[in-house]
Image (tube, rainbow, N blue to C red):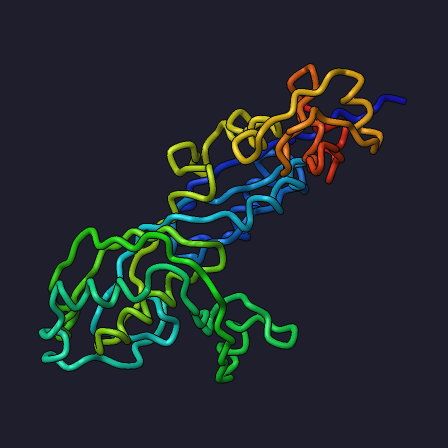
Length: 307
């Protein structure tokens, strides 16, 4: 009886186009790579574009470490129009008076943005995927319920105005602000647009959103989801892990011990923290935690996921 060959294993960086859902891209990747074992480290709305991190095969176990990483976005916020979804896909719920839009100055924009930098308390968008009593908030809103989510602590480490344009949308005067945002995981850029509009007394919604960075992974390394060479673009588990963690080069004996759940004694003075344990062949053993000069595996890669 022959042993079936292992399926692909690695981390895939996708450049999501506007339109498809994140779930659709996962399904496309499953078909392209011939495996059901594909997960992601965070979704993007259909209207959004940019970086999605997918785990394939045994490397799906790495995703839990990428989900909480800081992120960078480029976005366009339209002042003067509010929608029920806080983005361009929703229905218009309010428009600002022309005088309110005309009163927006660069100084007022900077003051409003300044108040949103640093650690802030943010109320997530009511159409987010956060569960309320087991049901996604956006589903409750779609069913006609009024949803009020609890505020969450997030950090906006950078909020930069790149450009500002005054224009007319239909008959409504608006101002489009192009911004760059570097923020903690869990930040809602739609909510940031909403709060910016509230601070300027114009209302606002998001008209464009592109994610360009998740932790140490950048959009420049991403591939289109319909590319012919998805398998060739997989980052090996070791390669992906070493972008996120310091490496620990194990001897053959140490590698065997870690894979068997044994603890290793480290040199005195070794730093605490998570490490990517690498075997002599350059393959990822797993993620291990160093504490008080002792190294112990948090999880090990399946043996078939060495490549």
